[in-house]
Image 1 (cartoon, rainbow, N blue to C red):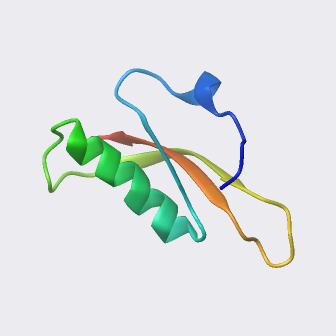
Image 2: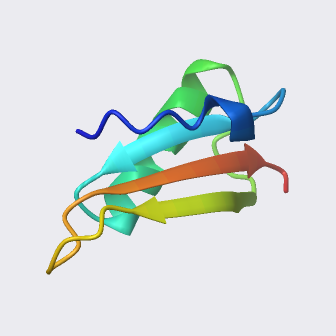
Length: 68
């Protein structure tokens, strides 16, 4: 995946995810949230979303916050 550094956008309780699609990026971030003991069923807010500018878009990065 991309070497895009999004650390300046991540606050306490936020999780970064990446994937080939938006859904996979969200799933990756959610897995990290679950590993940090967030409940399995809760709403999350996508605070930031990046895409790699290719045609078609080939990489996505997100920052989510559980309970958003």
